[in-house]
Length: 300
Image (cartoon, rainbow, N blue to C red; front, side, top):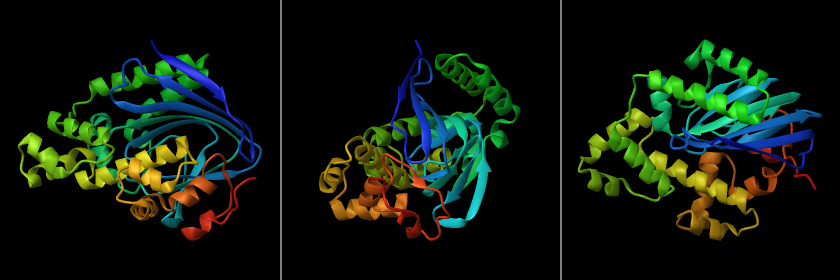
């Protein structure tokens, strides 16, 4: 039985209303890591940092579009309603105002491959409009989501549409690669390629080539992003926790290792992320250089 829960959260600066709905899937739960929806009504423009989380993010948006800029390439910017980004995307600056509802699905690269086939190999550092992959399905789906009477109906519609679309696709991921991804994900990246290869009985080269074909990443790269995802979740769940403890729990060698990896993949240090990016949105302004985005002081 599908279930949707709505929770009103304290608005961030510039937000007049913010609501989060989380969904427990009845059929796609084995393939979707997280399915949730956000509704926001902004009193003034805001921006936030969106780091990569080791999964393909599929976002279906209703209402006002958002502007997305890569933190590593601030001169590039696009406006999107619904879109797809890869598991190893660069840190993104999301800027928006007005009213918007979006549904966010975090898919494993294996599920994304079976949904979109070779289309996922085009992701790399790009944000891809969803209609470039799904065509008219996106327009029909957004119209139906707008007309749905409840959050439960919206989630059920979304799940049914994606399930049917998935069933029609000819692409399938090798069982060995799906197993390897599941093991890496369970270990939050704390597993070596040698361990996976030893269990499969494959050569190192063959395994890396097949893994990259279906996920768009090498196993080592995937492990780094899954480890980052665990660190992000840890910071978001318990922001008061000492960074040395976060490093230990997330299988980094030490706090310095956590800081280096976090900055390389998320675009800032974990301390900066915790102090400036959790619990509120930064005032919208051109981000400038990589470090300039974080000069805005946190809200009191």
